[in-house]
Image (cartoon, rainbow, N blue to C red; front, side, top):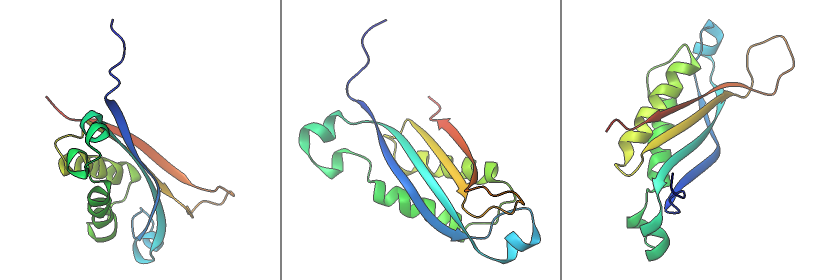
Length: 129
């Protein structure tokens, strides 16, 4: 087993906030609530590091725009698992250089009786080769 490839890397987006209507309860489907999303994109960063050129890497701004559109404008989802899966698929499709995407989706004000800060799911999907 050789040494890890230093060119491999991860683009991270933390704390993306989107207000939307997803959930099982009628109240969640009718009243927008805040969702928080973390994104990890596995990418070869060697070319971008050497060139300092945006064209040589994944434009995380463009990926974020696509993810926001899914959460805010896409079909309502009952489960965070379903929403996270779709976000992974969108992140992978955004750029061929993304080899894997990990998405964490959290409800910031979950409809539970206990005092919790957030509830959520984390999912990873890899590109099929």
